Length: 34
Image (cartoon, rainbow, N blue to C red):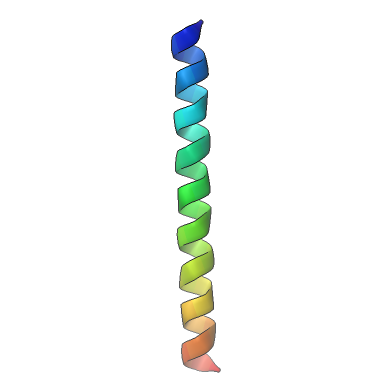
């Protein structure tokens, strides 16, 4: 039970990091093309 909760937290934090990386890359690309 606890391992499932920890696994969900890890997946959630990993997803947030990936989304932030995509957002940062999008801002950088927008700045270069702008």
